[in-house]
Length: 87
Image (tube, rainbow, N blue to C red; front, top):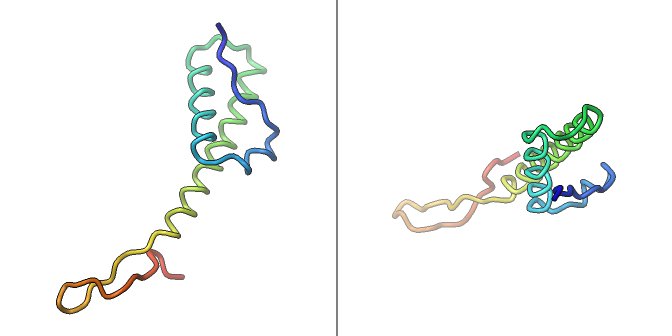
């Protein structure tokens, strides 16, 4: 049974949540590693995989920017939070 990869247009990649994009990327990698796709489909899958990879990296960068680190006071107790990467 052939595994199907979600076929959405590249513009639709931006709407995918991280988990869905990663699942599709993993499916593409499996198909390419199996080597049972013709050259044109391999190229198409590779291009989609690259777009999914960029999308996932962007989502991870955005998540990192939202993470805050806890600032400790002189006595070692939490004194507040600051952005992880202040701009």
